Length: 124
Image: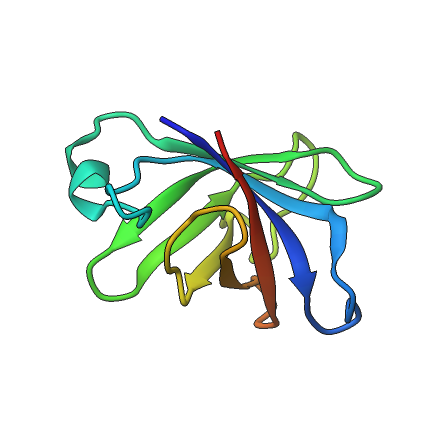
């Protein structure tokens, strides 16, 4: 599975983006570079994801697919930290997920409802 790296391109408070705000996803892509729901359903293992923000530890998580809502990212807080909704893992909805190829963009809605654009920087 390729490692797809996304860095913040822009959003509220980050008009120029931030290379220090990133997601890394191990996913299966279709030949044209799209996330593959059929491969996700068939895989017995979760597709790993990591959320990295400055000043804090990386959050491990996984990629989720739902036929009604599409792709989302689920993250578990480090030991001793509380998630946004008490015991619930952090979620981020991947919106406008097109091709995941370098130079392409996706929109991610963070758990608090704010959306940010992310640029695909690698799919190696």
